[in-house]
Length: 396
Image (cartoon, rainbow, N blue to C red; front, side, top):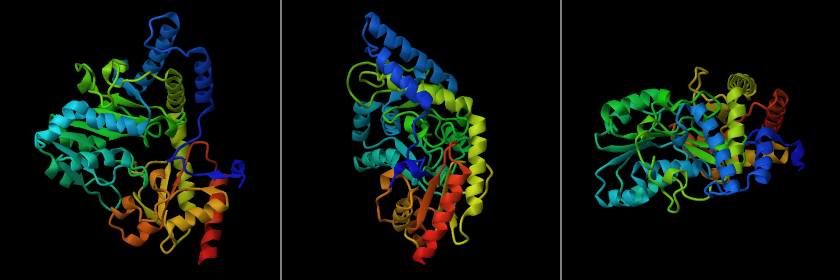
């Protein structure tokens, strides 16, 4: 298949880099190649570029520049947030040895970048409360209230669910946590919501917020962890998970990838400037897609278009048509969609996120995810809908 003619509707997995991001990456790679920790002139030039990028990103989140920690992507940001909340690798291990006097709370529908490190901690003895969701993917607030303890150490809940697009009410969740567990740190994985909707850690009530560059038009291999107000007087801002030198205030060691960071800043600047327009376009594209789905398609996730559903994601099932078969059949016709998160795209098992909604195994086995970008066209959606209908007729 000629990939240049492919219809790409899998932007939740990754999205093409923006021209603005690539231009800055290429320029910085050639002009600012120094190590930002070096004291000579070339190193100072890299440090100045890093500072400019950090300032630009911090303004978007309304936090001090020192509250922006650059990482290799969303997975590292989530791991740093989780281990950092436990006091870093060394103190986290000590905490585990203390027969888990604290507690971690999360949801059953987290991305593996959050779920797997918490499962690892649980296997090592951590006390973990896994909170369920309703049939649209919203967190069970009554169960959360019952689970919160004064000794809760960390609460980590995604902002937008990556597979079904449910937008959690983080303000209500954080208010509940503050009332019952005032010392707990609150983290959210915002990889699927950043630049799709406004994000202010203070307004959401979160202490740690993870983003991933390749979800917003930056290259792969760059992301950030954003720290809220509760980190103002901490040094280091957050204890490291990786061990090494003292870059980024001691929170994340390793030579800082200044060109990648500049590229991330460029993508963020473009996305922030166009946030309202892009959100309006995504909402219109999503509505067009939903109106054209086959009658036998069943929507997974939020039903109402009232702010509880992310504008870029549609997850639906066609009962009786296994998702793996459909993804492959559509791919042969040049349509790029997925059966869920990219990390699960080859799994023949039922979609666990849909299964956790309590809607039945058949829907979980036939779930498809279509995810859009502001560059998606209505013509591309119409072509997808036409080929989807043809594929259903072919296998009926």
